[in-house]
Length: 289
Ligand SMILES: Nc1ncnc2c1ncn2[C@@H]1O[C@H](COP(=O)(O)OP(=O)(O)OP(=O)(O)O)[C@@H](O)[C@H]1O
Ligand SMILES: [Mg+2]
Image (cartoon, rainbow, N blue to C red; front, side):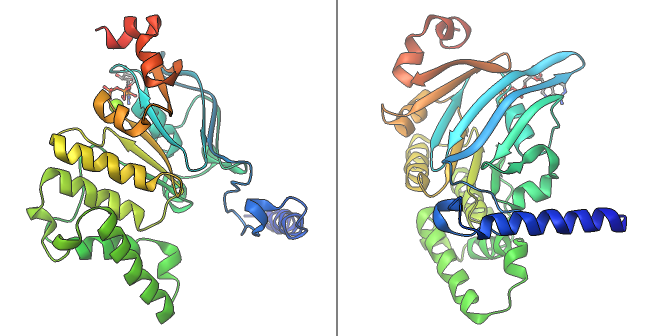
């Protein structure tokens, strides 16, 4: 970096910090933001606008516009190939769109950040296949997830260590694995492994959680408990859940939350599950298959 750019960067940072320190904007409800921290004061966790992604000329996403509120639990449905996973790839920096904008909070331009940086600022992603450390215990898996957090690694205070222990205990409770904490992760059922992986994401306290087909392969009972888990996370985190299982979506939306239907890379419909299930366009492309 040239000295000029360094100087410009320092100046931009100083200007930004003095603007936030002035208190004029009451950033994040009166709390001062650290440099580079997402600003959720406007109530929006994620905002995608006109995102287009092409693969060899085929538009997997086609001017996709979508907004998720802070603390919202949003289910996204849509037929195979609608672009749901590609959308998550764009949010997490795995795929760079050809055009469009993607903001985390009102100030973080996701399209300028690397995949690790996006994870670091509070976007957690659950892939379909659980990736836990099979030889380690449930507890050790959660400990490891904590160690992966740079903020925690940098701190050497014992008070924080106590906080971390408390956080592990809290997450074990949330993911229904308190009684299994000393078991090897390899011995867990498929559903329990999925919960453990969600728990590992929760150790980093992500503001936004992206969950791609989280109940695929789960038993009915595991699916129901997963819905309970997500409902307990709503509010503290924003959740974007992609799922084909309509019973699960119904349980998550409780007849009052809106769902988004994706088709051919754009939003086809948005509304209550019962309403979109009656929507003719939706029936045609998806539910009536
Ligand atoms: N890396 C890639 N290269 C080429 N085409 C791709 C690539 N990734 C996705 N696609 C195509 O983009 C379209 C959208 O795929 P995507 O995986 O996002 O759909 P989806 O909604 O997640 O589907 P499903 O419900 O089956 O998971 C598909 O037609 C897919 O074949
Ligand atoms: Mg997919």
